[in-house]
Image (tube, rainbow, N blue to C red; front, side):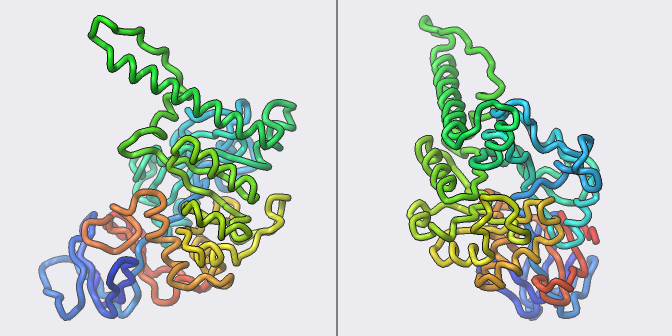
Length: 392
């Protein structure tokens, strides 16, 4: 199939004022219309529309709190508030792929999401990166699973376990529980490494007992491709605690929310973290958000910090991811950087830029065609393609 006569925003090296994109499940050719050669294939005339990569929400809870009854027990599957340390929980076992918000996302041009557990526990479980259309079965939507382990600092774990009169009720205890589990995992890794090194020799040692929590966290310490650690953190001191723990254990980490990041941007830039910021659309509904401001993405960007913006769905409905980027523009972020924040930056931060985030040969054929500005609240895409199939 080919789409021709479109302006192409590739989000990579080169844009096209009037070009074409040829594709199956992946993109096979991109060029200027002056280079276009007609062949026997399905053709869509873009009539001057603009083609953008599919948008990516780098942090949300799509499918974890089901639309329409998320406040009821039946639809609330994002937090297991019976144990503060639950890295063994897999988001894919909670995600309802038939939640209508998947369709809301795809219709808005949001073609991929990183979705998973909430922030009630210091260690909550993992996230999965999914396409937003293509199957009613979540397993068939997977881009990467697991995508990360979720850690949470600050107010949310404190409130959850203070209500239960259990640890942690302070920031110290939250950080201590995280460190304790990371240390246990390293010891577990050492035991398995020793067992595998000596297996079959005269010095063979006993096989370590299986530990589901440590086993789930082992990929954080994979030397070749370490699993990401995503740290929920709003307040400045919690942001620095996340960095401190990540540096102590050599974690490949991402700061999620980073609400007060603008207040410490100069010092935070010393560590060059990746940041997923949001939700930008919402009130200052709890103490940690008292310094929430839509100028924060621009402030971080001005200090060279790579960032993406997110909806944190259902905090902001998933279909408003482009509007979230527009709010960042209102706060001072350039329009180009705002678009990058929901395309190539999001893909690079999540480690999936080999497949998503830009219009390049060899990448997944996920894109949307707009007759107007996607950052305009009144504009919706005219067509959305996921894996080369026209979904809407």
